[in-house]
Image (cartoon, rainbow, N blue to C red):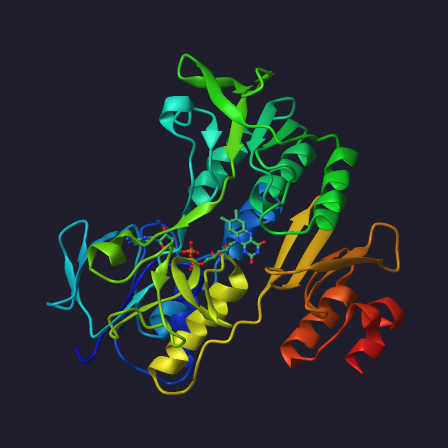
Length: 403
Ligand SMILES: Cc1cc2nc3c(=O)[nH]c(=O)nc-3n(C[C@H](O)[C@H](O)[C@H](O)COP(=O)(O)OP(=O)(O)OC[C@H]3O[C@@H](n4cnc5c(N)ncnc54)[C@H](O)[C@@H]3O)c2cc1C
């Protein structure tokens, strides 16, 4: 075999890398090693349509099963990589098999943070949501009338809360920070989303910390908050963020700092090893960032493949994201980090709003709730690098902003 490529991790970024490589005509031997028992699939529906029971798993697959054979991609499922031998250029699998590589791609994703076992994180009925197996287990426990505690008011937690309400569960969200969505959105967006959930009967407790989960016979029966309140519960979903899967990289001596450090063409500190998707931390406008989104996994996977075969340059992300809760759609363009001003505008129908973020007088991001025109406009403006001020947004119709 000449110059084999091995990808560790079989998710969104791996599929994008493999697809782009073959699209560009590169025929180097390619093997994808994934520890899940299924072909690469989309994760977002796991807290949305799949969890409600409205999307069959087949519809989540990123590529049809026949694609792998047609494109000469060896897909290993239920196989875990446990070590990288950089000197010998080998990937070692859990079952002892060794795969030689000339180029190695780390697309290992991230893992949800858990509550420690010492405070009940290990109890039956306590879930995190990352993969199909998690969603399947949760679905079986989502019975009408059951009481769910969602620990963490981020997107995955709030989406899960929305699905649970739709399925007839009683839901309490417990958020440690003084408001939901604190890490990812401005207060104005959090206000809109909080209202949405309260209208659907979700109890949202902000500035409230879980002291411990209470068990009986090994199964969750409630939670005690640090202020002494006790909430009865049949199940809990812990959505308190993720950690990048960087252990293999660190053990192999690659530079790691809350993510595997890569340059603008996705190379780690070993030029024969690339990293893409949730697990990678990359340079962006003078800083180093890590993104946890489909946009990033897809675009970075494609960018790495193009750069590898000399068909592309630096990865320059145009970040966007979405979240579906009940029948509301939140669409986010840009990154709001470093904003110093926001402006809320209303869309054409009740319940449609946009929160615009500005830094130094220039629009840097928008959160659009049921307002696709604002999302699309902001996304195009950001992609074009066009400067838009608060006064522009206040005074001009959306179409004119694009001018
Ligand atoms: C419930 C949920 C909802 C989401 N909703 C949205 C959304 O609405 N919009 C959005 O943009 N993003 C959303 N995301 C985030 C998005 O799905 C991720 O950012 C994206 O999947 C990252 O792709 P990735 O390829 O980097 O990692 P992943 O898709 O996580 O794939 C990594 C794969 O590598 C495997 N792996 C790890 N280590 C090894 C190893 N040593 N050996 C073999 N295999 C290994 C993992 O098991 C996994 O299968 C959501 C995520 C979740 C979990």
